Length: 438
Image (cartoon, rainbow, N blue to C red):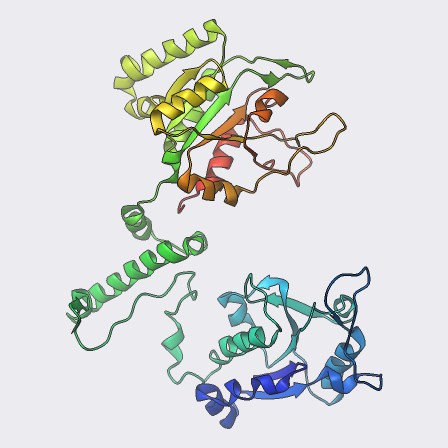
């Protein structure tokens, strides 16, 4: 692997790239490094490489000409550039999968930014791939380049010594690595797990698999969505997963005040299908209660008859699972009654989270408030009681939305068609808020 480092500060790399395994790899020619300084390619007498940004603003921007000429000089010298990579916070996140891809290259050209970044036109002129090492801001791209260099170099044949040593490492299979232990067997009353001491390789493999799953669930549960998990893996994760944010969340299915087809405010009928399906959805995600909001007496009588059958009557005997789900249902005349019901259940007054497929507008057609992202609402659920307010028919009326503390974004705001049934919307919202591992 040949690394071509485009940097204003090539001396930054001299110590780390002449240390430990990388130094040995350089000596044995497994890797090689050359440095290209854009300052050597300037066309002004002061060797200036940056200038102020068009449109104003703080900081300086790296000029396109020195960078483009510096990169082109690699090819002009008879070398290959390989993939040209700019280390920048706006790039795709660096993952082990990308590292494994890049490690197959014979050459990599790494451009290290400084100041406010690069003149955007370098991406129009050269085939540059943008990569970020994380959601952090550094003074320059050298630290990021060093991370990419070490990650790809260690996958080169002969670099690590024992080739299979990277097979079980973190991220290789979208799992974090299992914990390691060495002598002594007991240290400060902390013993090495007995499964690792008995020499039974099947038990050791099982212990390591479970430990990797537990570590990933604890620290990087997002990786589990991409991991290939067996039924045994899923069963174990279910055993150890003891967090249920759903207990802090309640659902209100509002039938008044809602918008009708002609955009007037009115009421809608309670449907048997909505009650059954949303109750089952709520039960699946561990939601504490489902508030059915309607002030119409006849509608409430229908709900009560349904509950009498499924929760207290013959339905509970023939379908106990359905009974378990429908037990979550409570009736409320309006949102204030639903809030009282929830306060009685949880001991806390809930924050109201509104839902709408359309933006909330004022009289002049301006958006009243920006929707709150799903992850922010998930964080709120950790220390607060939440009431997710769903509207039937054509959605919540403005007076219902006005009572809400936050508004969720539309589920499919990038699509042209955004008319999901309330049952589907409820399931999608809860899955985005809670998923499997929240």
